[in-house]
Image 1 (cartoon, one colour):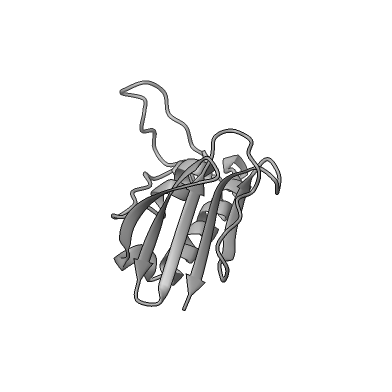
Image 2 (spheres, rainbow, N blue to C red):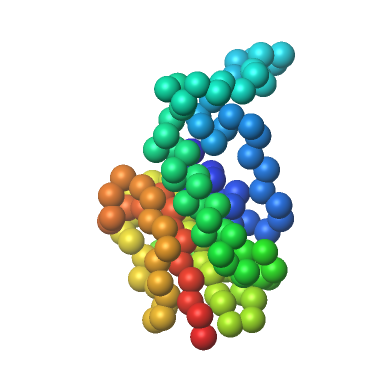
Length: 130
């Protein structure tokens, strides 16, 4: 699920997160798929909310994710893409299976690594400013 949000918040376009998803609410089959918002914080998945807020703050702080062009990438067996705008270059890399952490070109700063451990992230965000 974290990989999905990593993709959604870095891919071109306007991301859409339906109410309740940020706190881990689940729905059933239609018409039960969209229940009323559960406002009791005790039932919220607070680590999930914190993670999503972190990604949103990063997205908002990176103009390249709002205006940058898009080019697909394949790095060390991972699907990904590059976004570039003015002096910023952003890479998002995704891997469902366990793989070695990819070597990034010089000058990239890793912003997010998310996965089972540091040697096998399921997604990675990195940026380089020139």
